[in-house]
Each structure stands twice: as structure tokens, then as C-alpha cells.
Image 1: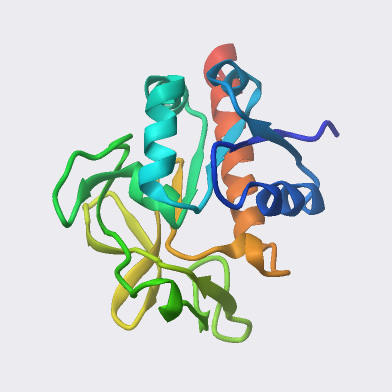
Image 2: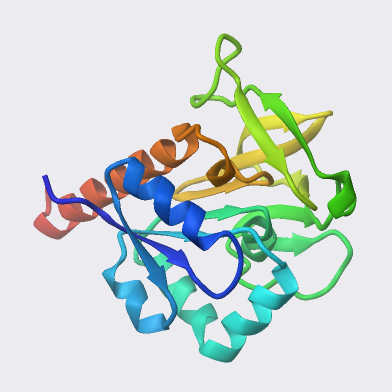
Length: 206
């Protein structure tokens, strides 16, 4: 079976770690540095990093409209940490959202500064249940203040939403690529496969 091409936006942040995790899961990771490379991808990961810096680079290189177009064409998108902020329709502190794809309100640096980074075990719906929780790494992490009615909450910590899904979009406030646990990436790859089947059926009228 041919490996699916999964892009990782390679402007800033934890790119190599995502690529390594994708390869371990049996996918082909592509470091996406130019908008034209998005057309090679069956799924896209927007990694953690510094959301303001990534946003400025996305604007400068012409990624914003192209990623929105990719999403409208049915290609799943997954945002980790800063990626969550970039995908949100609303920012709690105000300011203009960037991609505005997911019906959530994101709060930047909600858990504190770099020195407040921490790890914890999370239960995640459909991914990591109570008998085997997910060890989540939070680094200057956001959380989701509000989620729209079409958003499915997948994980919470301290009463705050830290993982969610809406259709073909997935977001986590933490960094699964920094652990040895590939379950979140495999979950996203299952979303990619589901979307690919749906597009193929639509194209053939099946």
C-alpha cells in the first residue's frame, strides 16, 4: 500500500519531530516550505512554535489562502499548540484570527510562560482511555475557552479543553510529537484515510 503524503508546515517550530513520528506511523512526511507543495499532501500538520512568528511567515509566503483552499477541498488539518491558535476562528485576547477554520476560541499561553511548562496524563476520547492515558507535554500552551456546537471535545485538563475535533480538523494544546506515543498521529492518519475515501467516493459518484 502506498504511504500517504502528510505535510508538516515547515516555517518554524517542531517540524522534524512531527516528520519522524509520521514516518514511524507508516506515512510519508513532507516538510512544506512553499504553498505549491500543499498539493502533494493528503493531510497537513501545523506544528507548535511561536504563533505570531509562524503567522507572519504564513502571510509573507502566501500560505493562508492556500491552506484555506486545501481545507475546502476536504484535506484534513491538524494543529498542535501554536497550530491550534492559528486554526481558531476567535482569539480570547482579541486580535484578528489567522486561518479562522475551527469554531473555537483560543487563549494564548493560557497555562503560563515557558518556565511553567509541564507534563501530565490525559484521557482522550477515542484515543487514550483511562486504562492507558496519554502523557501530554504542555509548553507555553493555549487552551480552548469556547467550542461551537459542531466541535467534539476529545480531552480536558483542569476543566479546560485541550484537544478537540471538528469534521476533518484536529487540534491539541500539547505536543504529542515530543513523546514516544504515536496514538494521536495515528488518529489523525485515520482521519486522513476517511477523508480520502470520501473524496474518492464523491469523484466516482459512489
